[in-house]
Length: 146
Image (cartoon, rainbow, N blue to C red):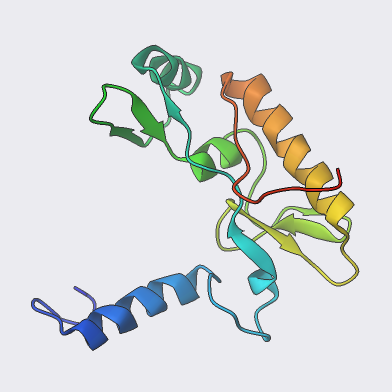
């Protein structure tokens, strides 16, 4: 809204702002956008104990770890940050699947991709985040037949 100079947006202006932000992240249906062939954010942002959040900070002393205190005293961590800081950068490609070049939280199915490839990359990312930070990432999509 600030970029558009809006201080009291109408509902239509607010909708346009949300769509613009989501479009910048390839989170809209757009056949011309190769990053758009995903189910969106693939992993939930983990909510952990304050001790677990501190372990993440200790494992990355030179980085600013985004944390979001929760009403129950736990801490929400940014799954995309954890993924990137575990060595899985934006635009990573693994066969016919990969991460969006715009944000590391979306697994993209490129031409010829299979569900097995998506599940395999998801598991690789989960294993990498667990090894680096001791944090379990939970997929948002429901899997069946695996």
